[in-house]
Image (cartoon, rainbow, N blue to C red; front, top):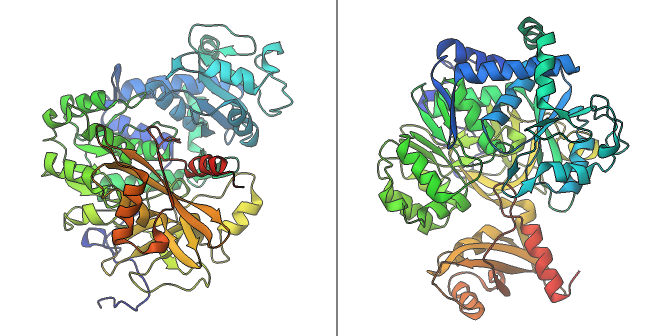
Length: 566
């Protein structure tokens, strides 16, 4: 029966995911890697600009590190931190922790010392893996030293006793330097000789699919980051559904992502690629020219880069027009929420590539909905796909909790195997995030149309309340990016004595283009209601960023300070 505009929303699966034919496939992270190794031992697993590893090399290195960790005293379900630049070595450490049956805490490599100190203590990390390598001008040793000022005075690097991190027993340092308080990686390698592979496997086979495999910290708007507890089932099952059923990957595919591996949008495609024995291509830091070289030179078949900051930089690079995209059959691009100038550039450069929209978040193992083979190709430019099979999605009125009619905006709520197990050590946040029926309230605003395709319309906190009228920041941003000089726009709300809140915008212009504040305000006034028009426009050349997203709270704080507002 065709859903009417007034009917409750329901997920309509496409024919390739007939529930009567679908069989659940799930395992642990360690087993996922070993299964790929069993089938394709000498096939490339990882390609980075400086190195390439086969599955045999990755498994051998990860197992060796796992033996060292077990010898050091790491036990199943212990929390092991990883603070390293994106590299094959980071993947090695991540799977070493998984093979031990322990939980990996992937730490944002951009965190400052105060953030590091918070995460190390809050996550109850017992061992931290890091490096003396300086990446993107970040010295991890210096930052850890500032975060843990007592470290340099510790005499026993295998039994640290730090008041600021009482559970932290050791920090393992890769590289050539010897630092007070750190256990050199060479010593961990020596410890590995004391433990057999059989002891590691004994821990591996006792790991449960509902055990937490990793903790990823997501940025808050005004408070400390929150640790999301993600199970083996959430990560592996989501990756298998994506890799095998949505992306139709085989071991011959090559998936490229520019995102750092402490980000869910890089870790998920990595695991999806490994789930079928395919090759994952990554890079330590994003550089548009090098990215285009990697895509063309390696015959990449899938691009996983759903954020405008990456796509726009590549599209504006001189190498873009000459890059060979002919092998790219799939691209996770999310053009439905990108400026049209960006999607137009890729539409022209990649006319035969199926563009996929994607909706997701860390709390749902990365992806909730995406496009699929056989869909109307234009939907890749206008919608964000249908929910993954087995994942429940509801759109509800945030004030009443009632389910919204089809096509109506409301809060996106999720339930299913991919939803995280809560925020670590944050009972209050968990209580407000989950309702009595187990639905996770995302705080995102979205809708589902009659064909089951989703759309994201911003955050509930990204909704402005202007004189009693609801205004989506995304609508203001979309209007501004229609101006030929505007490269990117972000809208925020600031307090106002008359209207409670009014819109303001931050804008980045295209190189060589110009526009004034008055011109952009007048441009908005032509096409959108007066209460949606930004009262202030400020110009930026650099955005305050997390790993992949613009941090609006910093923009808002900047304007409040300028205007002398609280």
